[in-house]
Image 1 (cartoon, rainbow, N blue to C red):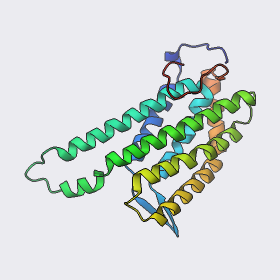
Image 2: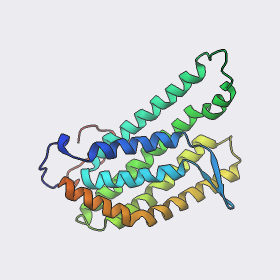
Image 3: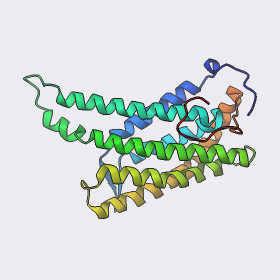
Image 4: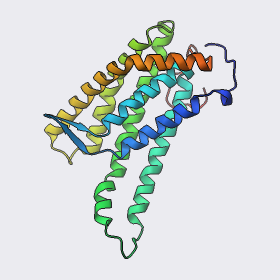
Length: 229
């Protein structure tokens, strides 16, 4: 682990990146619409969730697995709050002039199921992503962030995508479409991450330099079920 020249509260970008990660996860929960691009079908949330891998990779690379673990659990808590808020909104009596109850229920009626799927996918995908990046960073002496970030997504997104699609849409979409969407989402995520890797690498290096922080998880316990670093 590198020396820590600053106290946690003096880091310039940790809070902003953590907030952005949580926001991306919550936004993804509201994007369950299937999107057709040519003959391929994607879950709308796939186009936002892939950015959680980018932000998660930067957070893990700069600040370490332990801090990323807290952020992942915070995002899961935010998803639960979103589900409870939507359920309360649907159940609350509408004003006499309110005409949108049916549309509201159609749009957000699956929210608890979507959020359950998203929480499971977030935990699986984000923790595997963070583990691969942090573990290989130690093994490779901090080198090849571009390779570690791509390998992390290859290892994590197959689980995240399959878990989300199966839990969220089994019985809602035809089985063959579930398979098509899973494959299309997985391959498109890897392609997008690969294309964005140069920018991700540059941003991580800039943040390291500004923060004077480059954490190595040498003695870290790589378990999701721990709060302290």
